[in-house]
Length: 184
Image 1 (tube, one colour):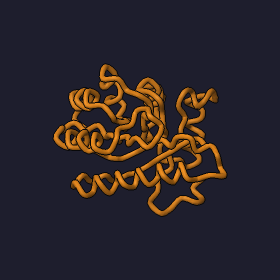
Image 2 (spheres, one colour):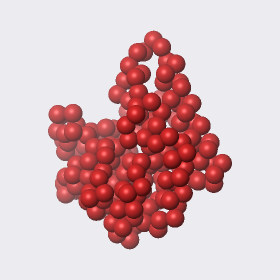
Image 3 (cartoon, rainbow, N blue to C red):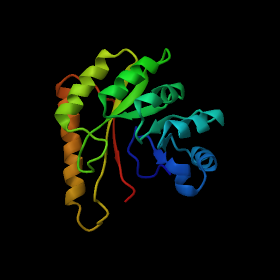
Image 4 (cartoon, helix red, strand yellow):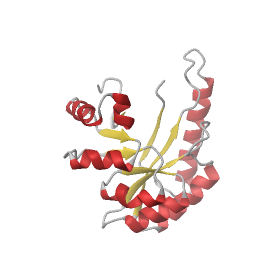
């Protein structure tokens, strides 16, 4: 499983939507048994299912979390994708003695969930001011990279994510983790 990963990399496996129909709990257990570091989910409800089943591994909710679901997400200690001021405020209020770890989503071409760089920097400054939140990561989701013969689109999106990482560092916004994904 870990072959090809660089030193210090973590491996997260997406098991959202009942592990694409293969069974959330059984897949979670199999992947964790094989050495996966994180489980990537679509919702706070999925995180709650795993926590009730005794799964203690790090969880990351990559799907949309509504402000009304902030308490459920915070209660599972899952990491949460963030691209919305209202959710940031709700998560801050829902934090229960431990900061909720958030990953700001940078728009690089998918045109869903992500923020353009200036808005992401603004949200990061808000996160820094909120005691119930911890900025743990930057993320994006690659768009339109299914063509395995032409890598220009993927490279452009990778460049945009690297630009964002550099801009965050230049603003003094430490981000310990940067990640991106697409099924292709």
